[in-house]
Length: 159
Ligand SMILES: COc1nc(N)nc2c1ncn2[C@H]1C[C@H](O)[C@@H](COP(=O)(O)OP(=O)(O)OP(=O)(O)O)O1
Image 1 (cartoon, rainbow, N blue to C red):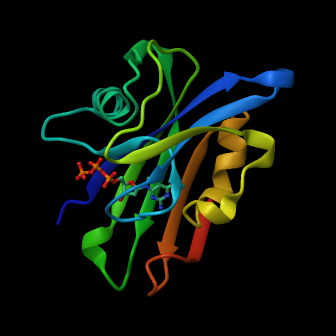
Image 2: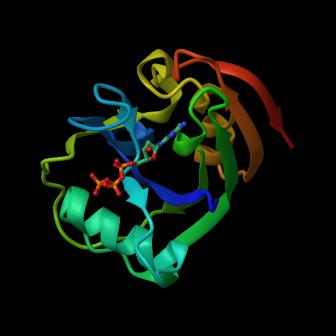
Image 3: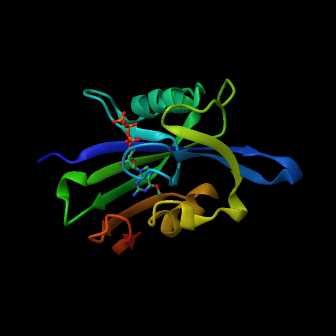
């Protein structure tokens, strides 16, 4: 069985008081409803991760990002041993340039969040283990296995 390929993007800007902010969205539907997530989603047939993230950002935020303006920050494997059909592999992107103004979509209610004050309890449980480093310019290469509740990280490896 091939594992579902997904992509996620964290768009950064410098906000008031020179604090770095990230564009996140409150997920309105599907797996992870209610959580704060980066724009992203599943790759379509024959799409590369970067093609998919350019499309997903446009669909979910109304912003146009160029493929060359995105930095690939790493790769994460997610397994759900009690529901293997949910297993995913995610390519993570970070961007600082785009055109347009963010607009809510039927997937996400958007907002800018200061990276120093992020409430990781509102995000997927894996985020706390790797996202702080990526938002500060680092990379990620990690594996997460989720518990039976499909919500909590049971085991993880972050390299
Ligand atoms: C820390 O960030 C994340 N952690 C985990 N474990 N999973 C995440 C994170 N950010 C996004 N995801 C997952 C959640 C979903 O399974 C996918 C995105 O899925 P979505 O349903 O939004 O995919 P689309 O292709 O946009 O959906 P449609 O099928 O409705 O078009 O990534």
